[in-house]
Image (cartoon, rainbow, N blue to C red; front, side, top):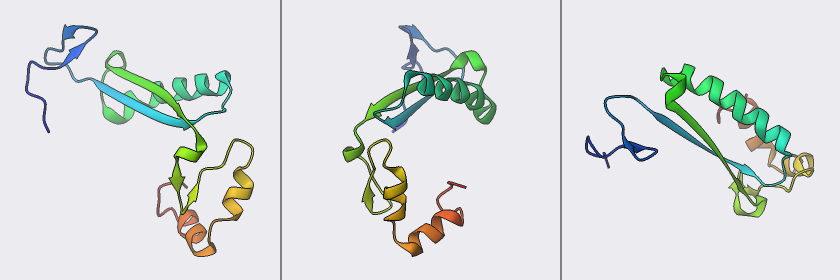
Length: 106
């Protein structure tokens, strides 16, 4: 549902005629602070380029979620360190689709 003009605010100020983008990343709990920091830096560099929005008008947020709260490729996400076992448990036909780039992961 579109938000009517005049109802967009950033830091309590009306956003007047300027494009602004927010990217909300949800990742598994367990990554080190340094890894999350590198992710944020990479995202904040690439988001303005992809969206063609001024770098000062882009915000990136990272939230963390427990692995058991995520379900993908017919499986619950693994806890950190268990990715190889998780990937090996995915059906062969589904792995072929993943490697073919069908889901945008290649």
